Length: 294
Image 1 (cartoon, rainbow, N blue to C red):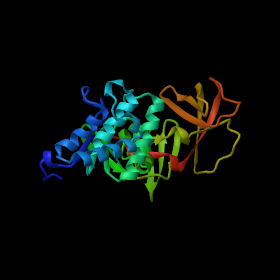
Image 2 (image 1 turned 90 degrees about the vertical axis):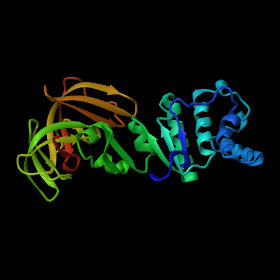
Image 3 (image 1 turned 180 degrees about the vertical axis):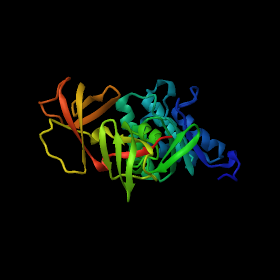
Image 4 (image 1 turned 60 degrees about the vertical axis):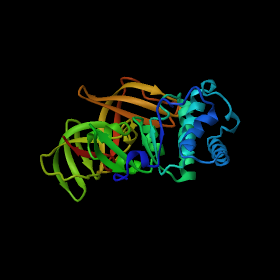
């Protein structure tokens, strides 16, 4: 593709602000790319109908675009890009202007359209939910440089550095130094105590400063009565705040003044910890990911 002049590349584009032409109807907006390609009127009409069916907007063919809602306009922008049957479709934060419920609906619809058409899509977003839920492969960029490429699961579970770990999902960091490391395992000395890790993805040696990434869902909050095996990490913390969100409960915890942590508890019961309670945190060795300090 690098050797193909830009004006000859079969590329579709969906803009963040939709960029629909206000003086044209829905059908005329979708038809524009087909007209430039000098298709016959009959073929253009067939393709417009097919594109509208794909985005479930068949009844809006003759409507003025300025009478449509934000979600409807985004569907038309998507149909306009798809109707030319592009080899590559570029989407620039296409659902960032929509409310939360409509964003979820559009995520699902774009994913379904991708599965039906099998068009290669490049989806640019700052929203981690968009990326994790929609991507087959993700590329994480920092300062214009690609830092890591992989599946959503690979990047979430095995971040290359602290930036990736914090950018994709939420995480806690505990600083420390490596005591020993071998065969994918490490023991790290931290202000919160010794942490054991079986998720070492970098070359670590004795004394290497690291940031231990621990996802909030990996922190198990209990009252300290449960016994643990030697490869589990145990940390004492104080509950600073509890936020009930229906299906989940979030705990803001303090190990010390310099070590705040966040834990997430799914399907919380009626019994809950209260601010000021002292709790024990259990963290599996697999959930501790030591990352070299940049």
